[in-house]
Length: 212
Image 1 (tube, one colour):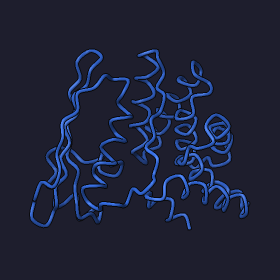
Image 2 (tube, helix red, strand yellow):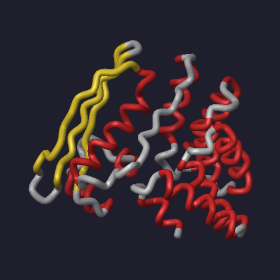
Image 3 (cartoon, rainbow, N blue to C red):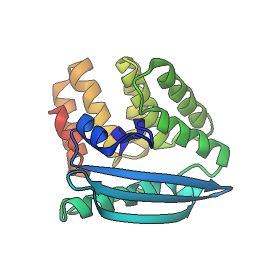
């Protein structure tokens, strides 16, 4: 999901698949009206352009992240049945304030770039969210990720540790903190513990394995 968001609707799926090294491409569209969203997603097998799965979701804007996780789970089941096993499906509690909620979702989308200026916008957005919701773990994780991607690993450690204080079962926080400890702080044993926690919480996430 996250790797493909940098492509536009006019990009051929063959080029997208080649650049990502993917066998499948997830296409989607989003329509928003007031506090509701309609998300349409379809999974295409690149070799023969077969649509192996498709679905439309009509939800409130506050359920946006829940829909993302639901789509991800259904795609995995469509491509490789049984890969989920007992993998827990996350459902983040989004801020009640629609302005704060929108700021979080926009900041989250900005993380899909390596551009320093855009990452700085994401960092500021997460900081604004945390000014209203200081213990909101997903925003703390987002802030840590923005700092880590901006080559500020030393600064990333504190929000990631705070995220785990708020939600000890946040697999992404464990994963990112393992990177900070392994590659920047050289705290091997602590990094191993957080990596093991990330793998235990989300065994289907290949990016956690790549840290090893």
